[in-house]
Length: 77
Image (cartoon, rainbow, N blue to C red; front, side, top):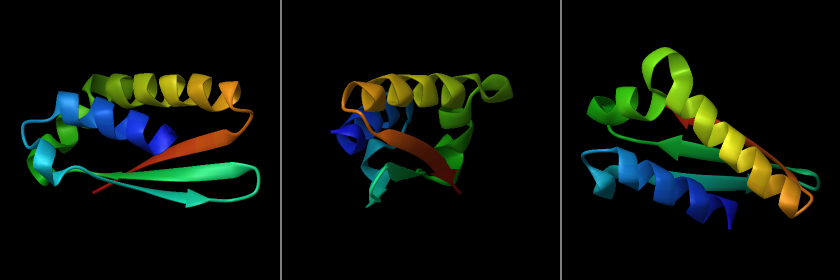
């Protein structure tokens, strides 16, 4: 569910949605969600002063709280 949420948001932001890759590493209490986009779209996902990335992390945190898990978003170059 969280993986699909991040993938949906990232595809809406970038110019090359086919190059968006999201993987999830599931632990007992914490899930790490890794987001990969093309180099040209990295700035769009991060945003000015990291605002877009921070907003995505806030939404992810709210969604993960609802299912009583902790999730961390890693944006990988």
